[in-house]
Image (tube, rainbow, N blue to C red; front, side, top):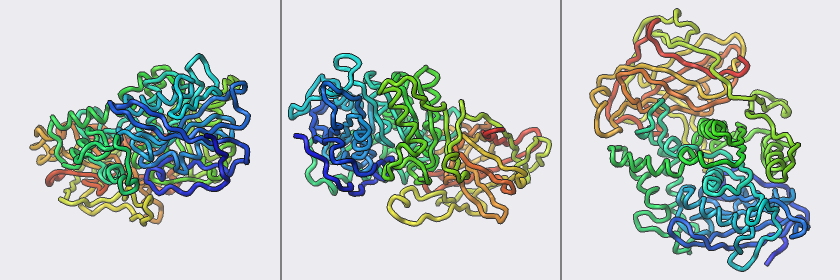
Length: 588
């Protein structure tokens, strides 16, 4: 039964997943803007039959004779269809003439089945059955049908998807198994979950896990396993076993292996196999749906490199794709004038206008609509709201190369490198701090970044004569010497390999240091006897005139698991053989 939507503000969601999702909350709709119909769908997914809890938002005036395209959306991790961030997807697009269907993802809210981390064969298959409903191929459990959706063919609705984080990856998972989708807008989501949870930024190191991102990972795991505290009467299809309450078994095993700090070949193979299976990196070759990627610069969970990898794969295979780097991500960073529908700014924010244009073009079939440039990025140093986003036809290439001198300087020419060696030693406890991953989400103050003397090395440039805009992922080529690490190089346990952390600071004239977006690049060195290349997380940052760049390699970081045992590291520099830092620079 349909009911009119009462005019009240939805309560703020308390779940972490809601805090992570893109804040979508438009102004209160007109009384007759749409009707809302709660629906249940019995689906078959992952070998289980369970119920999906959904809400259908139908704009006034839309019927069989006046159909409209549809928008499908779901929640961030730990949330539900009732979250402010999810329900207002339904409201916002219903207000703009789209039929909206929002639902609680599998294992969350009042939907059944296990949490399977957006597995295409499970979460994607369940979403595809909702597309069946929108296409008129099936009814909801109460017999409700949708004969008022624009269709491209019998059973093929005109439908797009939008959502953030967990609600972003499910779009790609669904598009991989259902080619009826017409437009995607995945926001702040992952490309490779192995990289997200245990990143290794050394080139060619996909065969072993990197440094375990324990704070983020265990935060999500505890939210998933602790759901009975919030939902005392769970659907039985959401119960797995006492050892793994609400996740699929492989997810629990992955977390347990990561927490063990030991990565022998057999367990590593299982860990990586599952992480890749639920990652777009594995199945993007099946995604042909036009995709507008939106990723956050302030994001230590899913950094800009994730969206960049997805973008490059889709573009290379001919899938229509464009990308925007907004300021806000899982680590905060919402800037004035950015997309925030709680202020009703779809039409007045840059990202909001791009989303509307994307749907206008691909869902409403308006071929004349300009969907914008291939790439856009937010510049937090620009105060004019009409100019904060810069656009480009491609990602910036390397524009500046710096060399690591033996005396701790970053120099412009190899000939300026001074020969010398420098050394640090790790402790058995972490000695560097970049972030407390969950502090902002739970209201705790964050400590400034720090590095303990003797446990890191740094190289600092001369003061810049003019501003330098770094846009993209810096790359560093390094060679280190560590006899202790060399002795454990060929251990059967990958945890015995050397771990280090690379990062970039901005040093102001008064000496104040800023770790750009608190981002670090964990590295499990693939072969300590050879040079290796590190890809740092992508950034958008202006180094102002008079400021200096500082490149740091540290022995540890308290947001990650680090070295097993003491492994001193020496870096030797000389004009003919030294480390190199390459910066992608806009307008170089």
